[in-house]
Each structure stands twice: as C-alpha cells, then as structure tokens.
Image 1 (cartoon, rainbow, N blue to C red):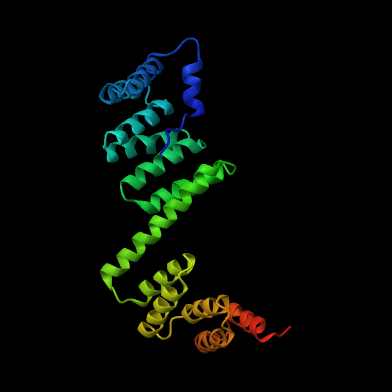
Image 2 (cartoon, rainbow, N blue to C red; image 1 turned 30 degrees about the vertical axis):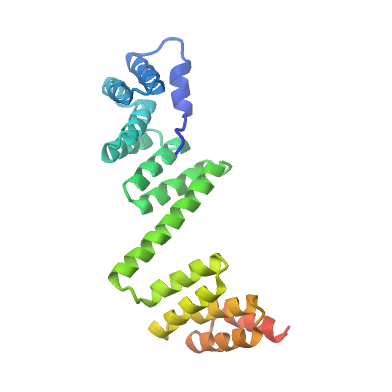
Length: 233
C-alpha cells in the first residue's frame, strides 16, 4: 500500500522554524529514504515522545512499524493519529492497511468506508474497498466451510461467485446443491432463474421462478422477472 503524505505532515516539513518533535520527524524521513528503518522508527518514536499530539509523528511511526512487521504496535499509533486528526482520509487508508495485515477485515472495511466519505473523489478508496470486500467474502466462505462444509450458504455464496465470473454451469451446480441442502432457502431459485434467463432458456427460468415464489410468494424480483419472461406488461 502506498505511503500517504498527509497535509499535516507536509505542514511539518514546510515551516521555517521547526519544533524538536518536527525535527525528529524529518530525521525519521531521512532515515527512511536511505532504507534505515530501525533508525526511522527510533526518530519517529522520539517525535511522539516529544509531542504526543503531533499526528504526522504517529502516522509515520505507524507506517514504519508496519513495514517492520510490528502490526499491533503500528495499529496503536495509527488509531491514536486517527483520534487526533479524525477528518484526515490518509490516516484512514494507513489504518485500514494495518487492520488488513492483522486479519481484521471488518475493521479495515470500516476505515475505508469512512475514508471514502471524507474523500469521495479519491479512486484509491474505491479500489481498496473493493479489495477488502472481496477478501472479506473469501474469509466468510472459508469460515462457513470450517463450520459446515455442506452448508447451503456456502453453496449459495459459491454460486454467486461463479455467476460473477461468468461460469454459468458451475454457478447452477452450486445453487442446485444449496437448494438441496436447504430447500426453504429463499434467493437460490431466483438466482438460478436469472442464470437461465441470461442463457436464453426461458422455460427453465420460469420453472425456477415458480419454485422461488413457492418459498417467497411476495418476491418482487421474482414476479417482475416472470412478467418479463412471459411478455406481460
């Protein structure tokens, strides 16, 4: 993940007269540019000790700690930086990266969503949020598999994944298994109906719609699809 240069940090580097803490930040950046991460961490940590309320010091310390594999310590610093500067989207991006490294995908998604709200025109958040959702989905499937590998939900999620990839036959097979595993699970037959409709097999699609409506009679999506396939206005 890219290292975000925060506006606050640039302010630190741009002032003519710097405080001792700001000087330590600059020393840390110099060490970082030469690849001396231990020295960078030391300098950033000194900056935090000198001025605990200086957000850039904590952000750079967190990023350096993360680069050294000290994830828990990095999260601690980045969380504090976020508290000090809650409207800075760059901190959210860094914190999300740290949470993802720690395997806390829900927390990573929460930070990316907040960052996207703060910087709606920054495509980086949309990209990283999409990645995080994908990893979260994969994690959920693996978790469900470990609890019950033949769960209807597992097959349903697999069917959705295959469908998104355009693998229609695999998707139909997964949805069939979901329906057999839990006959009363809504959404499964509707998903199959959409797949058959996409494959231009209206008879099969209508059959699955009727099965869906037997489970969920009020399904607007199923009723609308049935109208479209039947040529009804």
